[in-house]
Amino acid sequence: MRVANADGRAVLITGEGIVDIAAASGGLLPANPQLVYGRWDKLRALADRAPAATGPLDVTALRAPVPAPRQVFAIGMNYAAHAAEAGVEEPTFPPTFTKFPPCLTGPEATVALPSEFVDWEVELVVVIAHRAYEVPEGHGWSYVAGVTVGQDLSERIVQTRPPAPQFSLGKSFPGFGPTGPWVVTSDELDDPDDLALSCAVNGEEVQKSRTSDLIFGVDALINRLSSITPLLPGDLIFTGTPSGVGGTRTPPRFLAPGDELVSTIEGIGTIHTHLVARSKNHDR
Image (cartoon, rainbow, N blue to C red; front, side, top):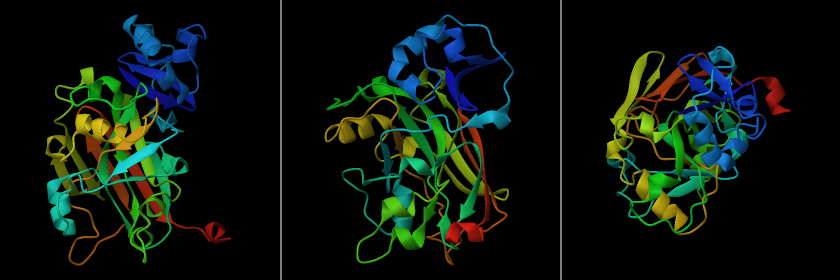
């Protein structure tokens, strides 16, 4: 099953086009893309009935598939090679911060660069289906609605500003959370724990890995995070980025106006992020 946000309405993606969820359910399910994650079992039942398409798929209409989560968890240093390039030891518990929800945007986004120090980070993003608290290991995937492609765009100066790092602020400028193109359920994937992911800047591949290389996979992340706080329907987990980010290169490399960022995850799809200069109106 694939769930998307088409111009602000929750839809299913099928081989024939889109199914408007509210219309197909006779109003029993909400049109709001965020709220369908609170009705996950009923949505699965609707999809199992294979309703007829209500319209064609227009990819230009797609928006952030999970537009307003109550909580966004983001994990740092979750690939061994990325920890090594950053010069830190592999963590024994997932380093966790947040991306504030207003930073989220869709699969074909134009993002204004606030500085010359913005970096790329392709990530698998997990969407929670059911309230999850103190979830035992081995049961994490049963709380997952699906997964999507994400970019954890990061302004490195703000992120590392002394005297204490400001990870959440440095990763939450407007547009710094591109996601999409849709949420894919795990049964659509050959192996949801082993997906190829990559990132390219202007056609040059800068990141390439597999989610099987995560230090803390999806199941482990849900176990560790839910041991401290409940995860809620529609919450997001940015699971971490592999090696190849710009800030650890010699010399460092960052995004510039006119760059195109293409992020792809096997079995899910591709998102495109277009970087532009910040207008003077942003500084007022």
